Length: 577
Image 1 (cartoon, rainbow, N blue to C red):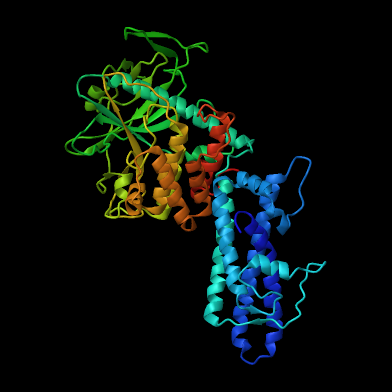
Image 2: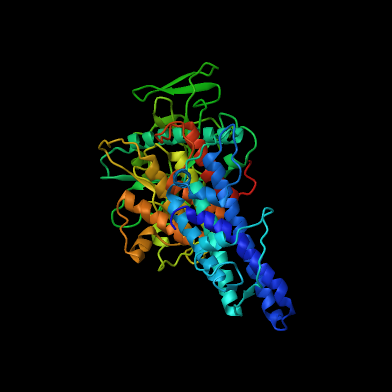
């Protein structure tokens, strides 16, 4: 027997064996010592019934998924239906890559039933090793019940009964999991119509546009010869406030990026000392009686403010900086009644960062001039605290790392990373798909496992032009799934590859290894998280076209619905539906 025929045999053998064991239980109660064995017989019957329900339900679901049409719902299948090669071919197409695994799980169910049937005496067959023969020799009556002409005997000891119960339960669980995995690995056909999803994805699109503009401006004012390379650290933000709000935010609500700047370091880990909040808004440069504009030569012109004045994108910088002696923070209240200072064009960002006492606010005009304001600084010493430590996520996931992330921190970190991938897609902030080696974390105190790390990615800027190329969406989602799996398992894919002695250097090898790793550890992962990881690895999302692109609105909505939102609900249960 091979292929899908085993499904019909298992479906026919289960009610026969259940009826026989029930019959034995009734007649054996008169035996004095049966009371010690009866609880295990009852558990065996429960396990058999559970498997019967699972097999029947799973096959019915697969049957309907395969043969249902808009105007026709097929009746439940019978054991004989699974003997047809055409049926097997259709179901194989439905299950996809899970078909062979599903047949193997059915074979495990068959083997467990064969071992139980081998100890049954009184059935109308001399051969109990072949379930197909046993089913044919003991057909049900017209009402579906079974009738036995001989007394049923069942000779099994307690240890054997417990082993068979475990085998039945394992086979049942494996069967239901495989069909679920096959469903997750098939492309989604339902389209998202949620207005909340549309609003949030639109907000993420706006953030992405601001991120592009921020990168372009930094690249322009950083392209100097004072250092071979400059570096900016962009902190990853989940922006949960966007997901939690139930109402539309005003169009002029500022978008905040947390960035740090400095020359690139080739020897030491560059600790982001200038942790800067950059607020991006679409307001006039000076929303007062006069409007300052910047000419192409850098000179300042003042004109009366009117409703027809040009709208500008402003970047407000609240800079924190470190000196050789101590750390200070300068704040200047933008809403102050004092006379607004004149803006000046920044020609060299690195030079102004070295004079951070003069740098109180950055503004980006519509014609891409980056400006700052000079103020009298108000020095506020920061409270002394534990030293910050910067480590890559890959280092933290090593077994020798002294930093241990709590499960809550790892889920929150997964949420931030997944959200940031949506916000930074198709931008130059990352040239390659984000992996655990690219993500760095600022840990305030490496000795506290419950401290919340701040993740960021680094981007180097040089004076030479860079080639622009779009990232493969499937690879981006695969690497995201791998990072989420690594965070849950607290180890890297490379370490798992070494353990399995398998390669992980190419895209295909990483995909195969990630699938294998997920299949092995799926029982130890929360169902919501395992579904997110599976969808990322298999890249099963809603699309308008066959080619996956970030420009596809339905694809972005699907990524939010199936990845960002489920992770967000684990961190913030009140994220709106």
